[in-house]
Image (tube, rainbow, N blue to C red; front, side, top):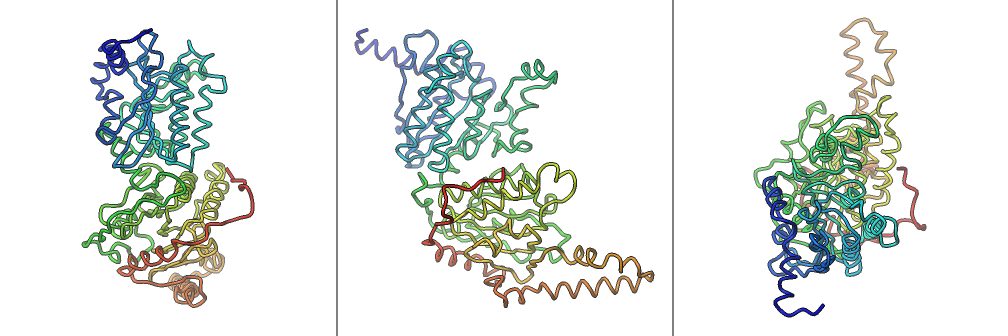
Length: 510
């Protein structure tokens, strides 16, 4: 076929138009943008270079074969991206769709730049399954490439509609996933398939909607009200990370901590009184820099990025506002993945400890709390980035290990004056050791006096000055001194040796 200028322009126009007008209108009614509008909102003006525009150009109704791929810049930094076009066969995958996605991930990996996935797809076209599913360049190659790129380049997904069946693994293999409430969903089998296979009657929203994955399953990381908010999450997430694993995170202009936050006043003296570690982190970090991840899932643990004097840090903190800050199966998994993410991309780790330990009981034992806790402790052990443990209020039992305690080669263990480090709290310890004796004391006043005396004895035994004198902790600092102390210590640790072990890789207790 020979094309003159006018014919080529018509071909381009048709390819860029997507599907029929009725599909555009249906999406607009749901508050959904056209795939190319999403790309334009995300990237710097004029920076997008598209590949594969003419994929399946000879077929009717398959503009660009339902996926937009190419390179662009975001805030002046290069990225690769793909965006499903749900106006074309509901964004489903054909053979050319798959090939385009594979190629753009391979390019991101080869050039060492982040990969962005703007997902809105009904999954594979069953009619094309032989061409797209089983072969060496079939759909499986997408996931192989994602796994190969994991930890080498940042991978971030914004999910605007469905991500069905095998396609649900694209978000799953990304570092983080932003989901638009009401439209986004992930599921391996549709509601009709679930009923046919299991007899369960459900809906896509109840089974795999944004709220389910962001608050219950943990597959989603950010619950967004609008598509613009989801795109902003992508932009902000990438602002904390380097282009690839060989580079340092991008520094910003130093900003002071919020002036009105009194860190000392935030922490109650009584262990029984909860406080919000998110507020503490915000008061410690550069003003406006804390970027919380997975805010709705496993809330007893707070994770996110922030900056100290302009330099990026990853924050892991126990939040006693939720379940007393006790570590559960989900919070252990949450910490594991975030620590591995930070270690992969050279982001120093700041642990803010107020942890009673791991949860006990038959329910969590059946869920595998030991295995999940071991996975978290493995991640802490293997992390070779600068890491500093701050005991804000307490670090009890294996919780001390999980929060990068002294045995895990932190670059420093810092304690506040009111910090406590022990196998368990005084109340639990006295009850454990003297339960029979306490029960045998009949006089209530005598019993109370005995318990009080033993608690005071226990508190003296774990006195923070004693721990500092025995070099268990490296420094005791006042809350108002903590930020400056951290800035200096992280700066000193920046050139540390990153070697950990003589091996290919460990065997993770998954």
